[in-house]
Length: 294
Length: 295
Image (cartoon, rainbow over all chains, first blue to last red; front, side, top):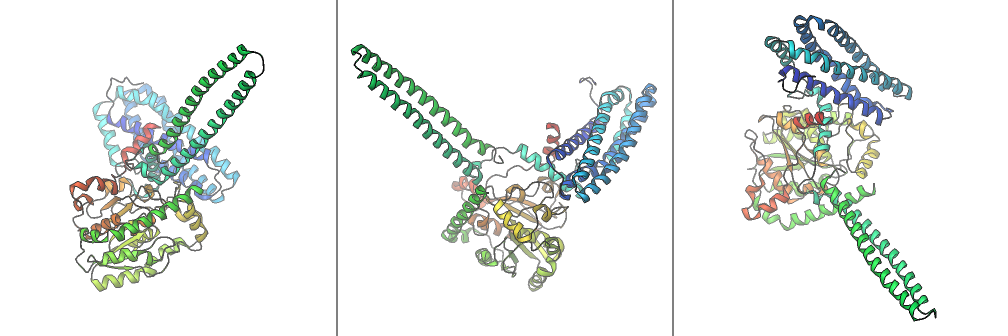
């Protein structure tokens, strides 16, 4: 791994960022495979858009830029030749895999049968695993070597190449072809980042959830009081029975004393239960105000 | 579903309150609202299941303030019919285009479109088809339809829409969805009025995404306008009417964001902050990148 003390060249930072973007896409593909039964063509839209992007940008721009970095690395550090050859083969294979995967997704979307979903799922998982392994190897082996060996003019050439093509999804401006995909991620970011709004308390949603929480709290409170009252009534009956059982004054006094103790303990229990219900209700009322999307 | 039914009821009830407030405060509103100066044609489009008459009050208000407002003239908006929505949207030019062209010719001026809810979706799509004849588009709680973001629209209304169209939400949205305009096309101002108290369409579905606003320039202004209002009452709410008149009167070449504070004395600025609450932050580019960081 690169020492944190070394300032990374801009090109490496960009390539690492692009790896993180790709990882987000891979995570999204995995989520979609897990959460969707892929029984309709529209359930493939997200995956098709992601794989199309992977083919049109990482395959066409990101990997060729890395190839340029590898060329320069081999020139400066010939013993990296074996690793570089492996990564070049990976790039070639990945490019073919992505194109094939896109075709498989289009076919599966058209068929949308359980068999086609299963088959494309296997293909996708294999692709995800391969791309992740590839990126990890680059980050742990090749990038650190490049940071150590490449000269300033090498980095300049790589950065020039990187700046010629703008990332259509995560770049400075979103290309119109990728608006749908970008807005999907913007929506996810919104869901994560949006907390309380100044007028959250006025939202109808929150009001309804809040009213429901209060209603539940009142029902719990009534049930708790009924329960304690029932046990108090039972205890007082027992005390009356013991007091007038004819076992003598001492026994009556003990029964009365025990009853006073019971009432005291009961009072503490009622207070604690009521405080618990109150706090729980308050939490349930407040929570939707702080997270209006819950 | 029960919760959504309650929300719809609450929204309708709030709309009645807004109507009452509009009637009670019309004298004050008429004094405050800017004047269009005459000869400014406007067409208003009703929302789903609503008729042109629901916009009567809005039209009357605009006509009293130097605009020439009229309803779309197609009666009740029944929404997508029988699974031919895409075709309907493509044919908007034929159905409504003639009315727009005639009005534009009559006034020798492009026409402003104001659409409530689904009417705003139609206005947005129509302006894409005939940008030369359109001056600007103002949408009141108009949703977008994304092909794979799960929409949290009121399920009662969504169900009605599904019954009317015999299509699922995903089918209605289609492969590319029905989203807001691109940052630069068409080169017209577009204002999305949205409310945090909307009981039918979540405001995030109505808002123009932040990256579109960031990328747009003065030739194609894009503006989000946040007002405290019900969904159904947007065309009668006094605070929305004031905002609409202001946006219609705004010079298209020197677009500036709506500033409600200039209509109220300083003593009432606390009320303005409630009526026009601060814009909720929409996710921008940096937020999406932060999403990547958060994994």
